[in-house]
Image 1 (tube, rainbow, N blue to C red):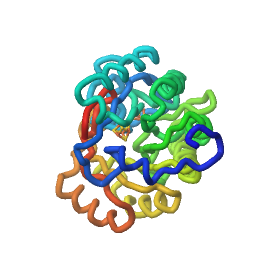
Image 2 (cartoon, helix red, strand yellow; image 1 turned 60 degrees about the horizontal axis):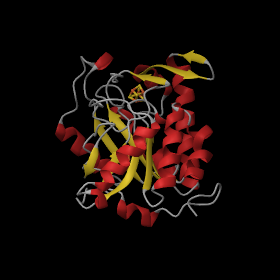
Image 3 (tube, helix red, strand yellow; image 1 turned 120 degrees about the vertical axis):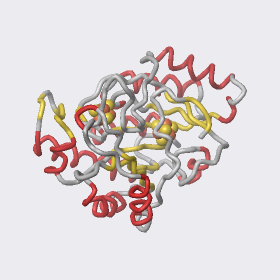
Image 4 (tube, rainbow, N blue to C red; image 1 turned 90 degrees about the horizontal axis):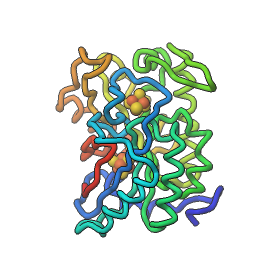
Length: 277
Ligand code: SF4
Ligand code: SF4
């Protein structure tokens, strides 16, 4: 049933095998990240593009970008390793935006053919989600992470330098507005298609903190099942900003936990991470 186009993917039971979609890691299963997606279609002010995408995110380096064939080899090798049986998830999380790279789809299709029982996971900034959702559902992607940092286009203008949309580069609130609209629509469609959806939000002191509560309410309404607050790693254009304190993140999690389950064990992993969480 995970193959077909418009039917619901039964997701709740899939969660058991996915280390990232429970509120705490359980050390029993792990994931293989394939760094096949170098390009990005937006510019987040906290992103250093040669590093991993904040979608999944310690922007930690990926050692190199690989092609779909190498992706298959990576999965085969990892599955043949001593922890192979624990590696149940194949994820594409960068180093750029997965949906902006054709290689993402090629890789998923190839891996799916060879390892049909694995769980397929993808993280995205959401800009192309409404457009690509049917294809993801058809391939059998069951777990999706959408990074949504704000629902306010004025705030978005401070977080994103530009977005590339339909052949144009858009800056300021106009660009942010399109991004936010697509993120929410994509989230809703993914949830209606039966995918398990997590929302990541980078907490940026002085920029998006004051709107986190309303953001959580809205993404819950749209079908998000789990929320992951990531502390800003000050770098790139946000290099001079302060990272939020651990205590601050803890407080936000306890408040927002009243709305959605909070992921607390995120290791902000690299685009080429392999292992058990
Ligand atoms: Fe987990 Fe994110 Fe990797 Fe998916 S993309 S396996 S949610 S770390
Ligand atoms: Fe960087 Fe990811 Fe933002 Fe693209 S979506 S700019 S790769 S953090």
